[in-house]
Length: 193
Image 1: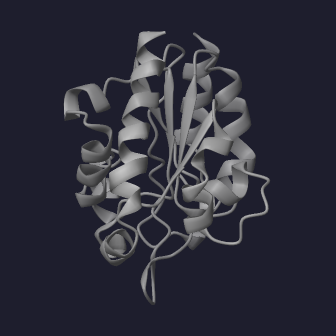
Image 2: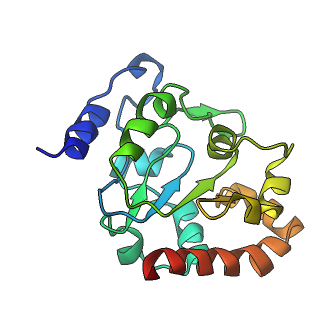
């Protein structure tokens, strides 16, 4: 059995923080040895938890729109890997879902990434992924996203596409005017090279 399949079985069997999860464990990820694009988000919401399909919600619809990508392409695991900072639904907080559980990324990300040698670009969606993967001096997600070019060629920081961020998108029209076309261009390069 290939090592990546064995590792995914270990991830999906993980019960490390079971007592902290209001809906119980249901690790959601999609990975393959041939994927060229990695998408790292926060953690599954309830709809994703219930369907076990990552980005299967309005946030995913907006993300696919930013990428100019249909669902079939987005969910082609041979091309695109999807891995959140926290693999299970963390529960509800005062203003949305709780942060991703802190155990997942340090435990599973590095071993999984080591078995995906074809990854050419990683989209870091939201503050949790960016804080974990970027060692920069930016104080806000807005500053970091504005300076996305400094993360290339391997990483591309994005705001979370949640409907809760509609106000941020309105306040920062440069994102959809300037960053989204560049994002699409970078993603195309990943699949054309």
